[in-house]
Length: 151
Image 1: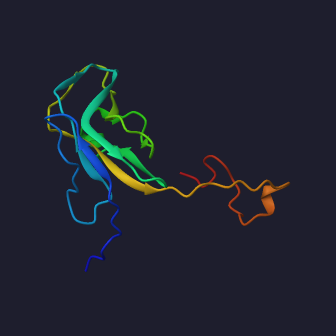
Image 2: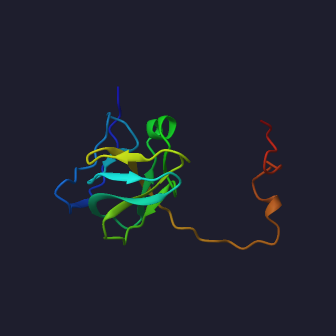
């Protein structure tokens, strides 16, 4: 039995003739697939903007994160360079994905309509900092540091 998730309405403009509405591959998925609107070749070691043809109006108190698709990261040299990429609530331009080809030898070709990344809606509580004199006595005993939990 799958519980019904909260729904958040977000206005979206398809601003390119090849733009596709983001879509969940399966019910319950966290991320919606997003698609490239044009053919593109990424040279080895280069980073480019991949257009999606989407403009969104994210409600205040939320962000959209652009994340890699796991299969692309595992099976190809394609990476979302600033993973996760953040789309802030006030941003109204076209959503583009910063993608890198980490191969040192081969071009990577993206075709119009390819699923190139996924977007995830995240709620954003606002931080209110509370200055203290000594942080060690406040609810944490983890200790250690980088690599302290072993391999």
